[in-house]
Every structure is written in structure tokens, then in C-alpha cells.
Image (cartoon, rainbow over all chains, first blue to last red):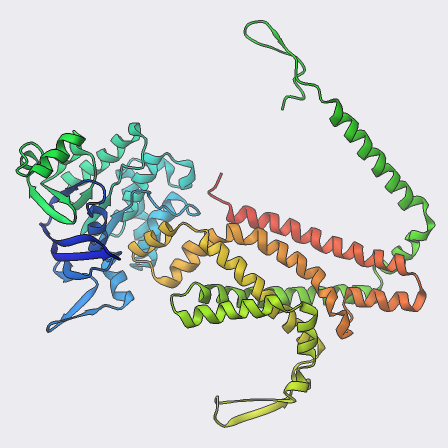
Length: 250
Length: 284
């Protein structure tokens, strides 16, 4: 479903990604672990072209993201095409980034209505179904400002799902939450994982990784150090750097 | 909050005596005295000529002048903020040419006094006696005399709008910059198109910081229209001058103008309050 091949990305002199390759199969849940500054978030942001890659390719659902190949040349796609591709890739931000001037219902309905041009009645139904799923049906007409952090992140997840994406990317979805609110968000994500949604999750929640991940990827200094099932990477890491990291966060 | 609770019994049973503020009382008494003196003089000093004020406040010539003042304000606001909005977006554009042109516009139009700009537009015919329309550097389709196209009202509206646009551009730019960049990113990640992103997501949030400053500017513009008296346009300030030159009732007629300016800005402040409430929704 996702094929990342030899991706490089630098910010000025800082080389954040140094040739990352990764495959995520349909229905698979991949959890990306790594120390801060290891390039986890940047990697995630290249998948929906919020960051342009310097070299390498990213493909989602068999389609190159952001580029069109003709012979040996990659032509950058016009913005309209990139926006269309993004509707297939849900993104959940660390800081939620809900639209504060729109109600919960309007937040979730915005993209299906304007980016996918789906009929109003159908979208209304989708919104109700998704809010039920994240347990916030009673908050449909509330503004984000009146919700707790955990509730906001659940709305943000519903908003990402409203596009009916092929994959959903989570960028440290619980890092901005008070500790007692982390659980409700992880519950929703676990439920998603079980239902066969293809997910890439950048997180520090080792418990979630062990329980919900099919694959754990350990990233350090812009490279994939190790990847495999959770009981291998978390419980029996092969590399010294992975071992050191796991022992620090457990 | 504490003023109505003279002595609250705490759980321990001790009485709580609020702090006394004798100097506040003293200051308040002083202010009341000054207000009373001012009111007294307004009523008793015959030089205010309240009956003349009453006679001219709703005189047809004054009402027509108020209307022209409103018209100039409206034109200056609408075209000023429309152009200002475009300039703000240009200024924030990654294209260096667009960005520097917008910067240059603000630089020039903020630097030159309004009164000078107005006289300049009024005298545009000296610079370009005829204006022609056609293909740039190519043939002209038709041309008109500058004087016919740009009369005094047009010149005044043009001057006010172009001047206002420079300030509006900075206000709009400030508002747009105040919106969390995460909002733009979230909208882009959802595949929302650029134009929709701007009008549906960014601008409504920018309005929260644009409206108070814009209100200030528009209220300034109501009074700024009084500058066009130098073009002999019969707006409020010019009109009362015409009347008092004729009848010598200077103070009374200045008072008429002051009352109208006060009334206009009051209405605008009320409107502004409701607009602010609209854009403040969803925020505590």
C-alpha cells in the first residue's frame, strides 16, 4: 500500500533522511519509533507530500506521490493532482490542527464536501457514523475550543477518516495530551487497527506499538536501523542503538 | 465582585474585612465635580447657541453633506480594503516581484500625506490631459479627457481608497500572519484547494485580528474624509464651514459637525462589536 524507496531529505545542511526504504502492506499497522530528531515526523510528512523529497520515491496505492514518471524523469505534479492524492492519505497531527471557527461537524465534513465534492446528505451520514465511532456524537455542534485534548484528537481522527483514505498517518498523536487523556485516543486507534485500516504511526507509546503494530520500525539519524514484528524489535532488538533506545523509554 | 460582600464569614468563623480605598472615593468625587462643571457650562453658556445647533442639525444641506461623507467613507473602505487585501496576499507571495511591488506600494502611499495625494489626483489632468484605453504599447481604442473621467468625487474617492489600501494591506497581512501555520498545513493535508483554504479556513480566523484594526481605520476614515474639503467637495466639514462663513455662527456649526461625526462613529462601533462577535465564535 505504501512503498518508500531510498528517500533523502535535508533541511539546509541538516540531513534528516538518508535513504529510507519501507513497505507497508494493505491493512498493516506500522509503528515508527526513534529518538527525537531521528526523522520520524519528516518521513511521515513525505508520504503525503507535505515535505518534498530530495531523492527517492514515495508511492501510495501504486501511485507515485507528488510526481509523474516519464522515462527517467520525475515531473512534479500540479497542485490540483497533489491535493487529489492527499484525499487518499489521512493525516493526524500532534497538535490536532482542528479549525477553531468551525464546529466539530463542520470540521469533519469540510474535506469530503469541498475536496471530494461528495453529496451533502451522504457526507452528513458519514460524519454521524464517524463521530459515533470516536464516541463524540454528543459533541457534533460544539466548537473545538470547548473540548478536552483527547476529544479534540478524536475529532481530528474522525476528520482524517472522513475522506475514506487508503492509509492514515499519525504524527505523535498523543504527545500533546495530558497523561490521563492518552488512553481514549489510543483506544480509538486500536479499534482502527483491528478494523484493517492501513496505518503508519509515529509515537513514543511502546505499549501501543507492542499491542497494535504488525511492524515496528526503528529509525535513527535518518536511517532505518531495524524493523520487524514488535516482539522482535521491542523485546529482542538486534542492534545496540535499538536496545539503548528501548531501555530508555520502557 | 468583592464590593457587595462587606463581611464574609470564613469557615474558621473569623470575619473578613475587605480593604478600604479612600483615594478611589476622593478621585471619583473630583471627577464628578468636573463633569458637573462641564455640563453646567454647556447648558448655561449662551455662546454654545444650542438653538442654532438644533436648527442646522437636520438642515437639508447638512444631511446631504453627511450623505456625501458616508459615500466617501464607503468607497474608501470598500476599494481600500479590496486593494489592501490583494496587496497583502501579494506581499506574502513567494514570488519576489509581487512581494516587492506590494512593499513598494505601501512604502509610497504611507509616506505621502493624504492631503497631498488628494490634491495630486485632483490635478491629474495637469499630468495626463487625456487617458486612453487600448493594448499596452499598442494601438488605443478610445480616449477620454481626464477631467471628464475623474471629477472631484471620483478623485476624492480614488485618493482615499489608494491611501487606505496601504494601511489596509498591513492590517490584512498582520491578520493572515497571526493564523497558526498548522491551519494551512491541516487544510492542505486534507486536499482542500488553495482558494477554498484561504476563504474558508484562513481568512475567517485572520478576521479576528483584522476587524479591531480595520474598525479603527474606518473610523479614522470617516474623519479623514473631512480632508477633502480642500477640493471644495460639500462633505460635512466643508458644508458647515460654508454655512458659518455666511452666518458667523462658528461654534454652533462646528458642534453640528462634531455631533454627526460622533453619531456616525458610534453606529460603526456598534456594528464592529457584532462583527467581532461573529468572528470570535468558537473561542472563549
